[in-house]
Image (cartoon, rainbow, N blue to C red; front, top):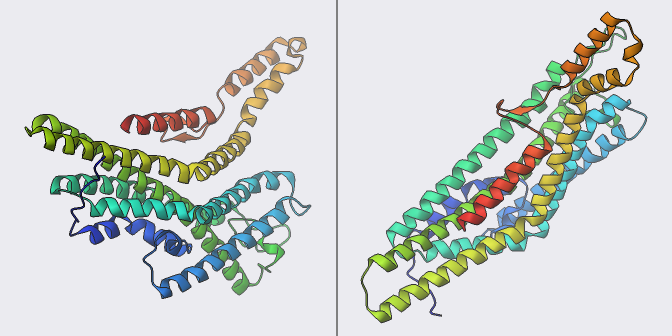
Length: 364
């Protein structure tokens, strides 16, 4: 099979930089960028090592302190359940961070393929297709960044002051913190120490947000690029039947089209191979956190179940009717919804994930 002719794109360096811009900034913060992108300077590698060590230090400190608080006698059962969500989030964030490092060669390989595709653009129309799909990846990346940082920073900076109240009985000033357990190491009654601990929690949150958004932005960028390559293959196929050419040129165009399609399929397979562990971690972690939230909300339905199990038929008639009202109300427990459109349950989560997989495979 003939190889695709190399007609270099004069703007390929700028195109690659523009495509990777969001991934570059996010991965630099957590010190991963030099591992996945080969063309980095010595200063960038040194700064990346410092960022990498700092991020792992704060994440490990956060995990240790929250684990001690959650699994010891320092907290009551209600606080233990409340802390399982943040504890699980930091644990799964560290797992994703670990697999970003373990899979860095696969990420680098995908970026090399992407760079080569930009160098091999053969006409302006194909470049416009790639730019259009790259812009779609940028839109998804911006949405992930805005959504993650707005929600995450609000939880770290605003929610502590809204949810905690001073203990009037013991005449103690309660220092609001997003995550409990930091009083094990820090004396939060001292204002400078409290400010440092509060800022440390916010910085740890930023690190976790960057890990999540980095994974999402990498996936969005790779998938958008794969879709762009498939669109180019479709354009080539249409040209085969619209452009009149001799037999030799037709065979050459057909060979180039088939090879381009094979490259796009191999790149898609590389995406799946690169993200399989991270996607599993994301799915398991998100599901467990959703289950914890649903567990906290499902006690409304427990009221109806308990009311049904008692010997309500031995009660006076009017009292039994009151219990029936409680049972009926409890059949509709409080749920967390996405824009009041669908409930955030495991069933709907699985349905949405299945739809995304089917759409992506159909596109290819």
